[in-house]
Every structure is written in C-alpha cells, then in structure tokens.
Length: 286
Image (cartoon, rainbow, N blue to C red; front, side, top):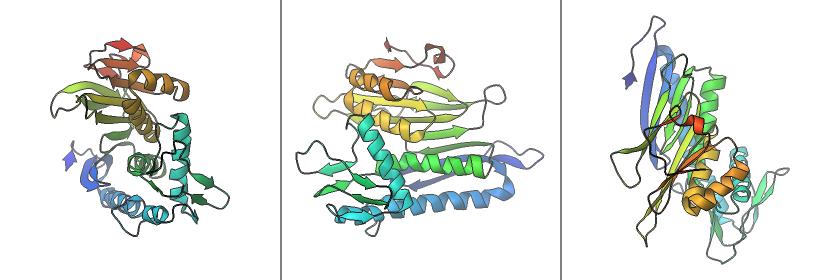
C-alpha cells in the first residue's frame, strides 16, 4: 500500500504489512520509489532470519537447540548473546518479575549463567527459554537503527504486535505520529492516543482468569525493548507495585496503567498530558 502522494523528488510513504513472529508487522517508510524494493527485501529477511534463530516453531532454531541442552554450557551467536544479556539486565531490574526461563521446579531464583568472553550460556537444568516478547521488541530496535542511521531514511514507523518504534516527524515540521491505545478487552474504542515525533511505545494486556478483570499497561520511551519489558512487568505486578519499581529503573519512561478496578493511572511528566497524551481520563497521577 502507498500512503500520501509523491513529491517532485519521487519520495513518498510506502507501507508493508505481513505476518512474522506470530503477530502482525506493519512498516511505513518515507523513501524514494527506487529504494522500496531493497527496503522491503531487507525487512522481510530480518524477520525471517530472526524467526529462524529465536522461534520455537522451527525445530532447528538456535533457541530450541539451547532448550534441548539445558544444564550444559553452550556457545551462542552474537545475536543470541545480545538478547540473553538483555534478559538478565531486565530480570534484575524488575526483581525477577520478567524472567524468560520456565521450569517445573519451585526454584524462584532461576537465572542464566552467561560468559561474554567465551560467548556461552548455561540454562538451569530442566528449564526452557521463552523469548518471543523480548525478540519482538529487539527486532524493532535493530531494524529501526538500520533504517534510520545506516540507510538515512528520514521518517518511519515500525510496528510488531502492540509495540511501535517511530522517528523523523518533529512537531514543528510535520504532523507527528499518532498511535491509538485500545481499551482492554475491546475491539473498538480508544483509551488514549500517544503523539510521538520519535521514540517507542509498547502495550501489554493480560486478563485475570479468576476475577475476569483486565490489566493493561502502556509504556512510552525511546527503547522498544525497555518499553516492552516494563509494560509486561507492570501489567503483571499491578499499578502500585509496578510503578514504584519503574520509578527506580526507567527515569525517561511514561506509563498508562489500568488497575483491577478499571482506574487509569498515569506516571510521567504532567506537561505531557494534552501534548503527548490525549483523549484520556486519568484517575490517579504518580
């Protein structure tokens, strides 16, 4: 699909949509027409290579290889080492609320043994890694870096699931990117809109099976990995505990969180309300 019209330099918005990493992927890039075939091919190849390395759906993936050899020390690729180092950083920052390790044991201190010198890792015995959520946000970070900084593409929006990375639409020059945040458990109706010139935003929604209440958290910042991890952690912990924790570790993030009473909590700069955050009714300010 093509959005917007061409200018005299033959630049325009081009949009690609496809399925990858078990979710929807949308890419909107401002570029010259002759660049589009290369951009689309690079994007599809990045997602294909990421799936082949990190997805459990592929029997020969590096992730499945690691899970098969839990308890043993294994050499890993640079990409896997980068992901696993990030998981350990955020496991510690979230006080183990985010932990990609799954085990049938009752051990609450599951963690990876990483050796950056030998590029190797050991999983605890009888444990497996689940990396889908962090990988979805990591590929946004890496692909945006390639498009924005190496290929010098002036404007772009990348979306994987409910995570976004955008750049290149400053408020004083263009209409900024406007991202709608849906109400939890509903297919229509917006909780709020986020207006961004550059940055990242991620939403995590969970449902309590016993109480039937929805927990939802949206985190905005610059790094999609950071936003995605904290959205997941706060949705799991709840607004009170989660916002207290993010205040200690993510000073530049802003948060919208819905609690079990369907009340909206806002954490961030009050000056952002009405400029960055719109069309929302906040119940509690933090």
